Length: 396
Image 1 (cartoon, helix red, strand yellow):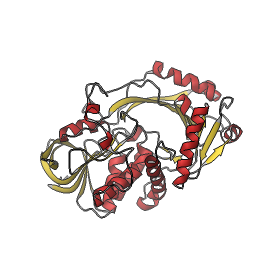
Image 2: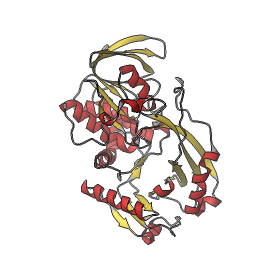
Image 3: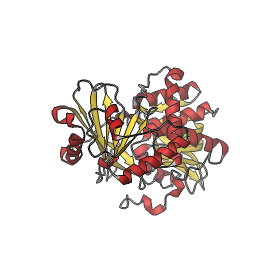
Image 4: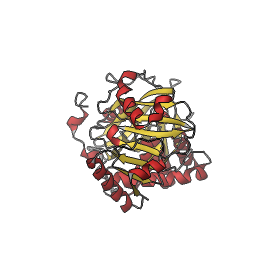
């Protein structure tokens, strides 16, 4: 393996976001695009993502970027020849309260403004589309027919192949060990391979897309990237008769989402009191790893899910999974030029929506890096919104 001595854009991190940025930069015509991944592509958090592709987001910016992502993934397999597992089986979000109904209606209106097909549906119509669901306290539903799901790792690998097809270089097993600055500009990075080789690569632009390592990498570069890893849980049941080609289901009032996975049901959750992980740093050896089970922590979510989806009470659990994801203080990801720098760019902290955001994030960052100005209002995800104190470990 030959590591180049210089690059126009050097990307740190080989998850779906880093691969998307490499893809968009290379396709835009950037030459000397180099991606460095400390272990293997997708080995951080991308590999165990649920793979949901949803377009109903909390802000206009995130909605616009999510729609772009969905459109991009629809063409990616034909372009690269790598199967992405993309299925546009739709999604349903349901409200259990008047307040949640109002939120869903507002988000649906915003989605329509960006051309996302959305249908407001009654509880009866929810039941018709999702017969296994208990709807006695459902007040409203929103159906997005072009939402769906895909294979997270293969989506990242397809983006990587597309990037390489346009001249980008991907280097696995190369860890950035130091970042050098001259005033407000990064001048290059030191690196070490798994075989022990070391060297230096100069760069005109540095992109930090290092997932849950981004805060640590940011400190190496002298910039703040406030995020922290948390444990994220989901279960996969044994096969369920008749449970095929179901839309993704979200029940935000119960912090749960449901996804059909080869005839099995995947139940995931974003519990109100999360479990932070990696308090003393993330082990250097972390690669395709999962965390110890904590059934007691997941029980309240599971109990509510059994009431919501009674079929769970008579279905065995095939897999209990616990893996880390990175989260930000305000639940919006970090994108853009890092404050205090002229050429350090950030795309990290995707709060478990990296798959459905990666395409749009890569496009937006590429336009920003190419033209020197923001492509549109990215205020809700612009890393410039963060304050220095928010990078304090105790605060996080």
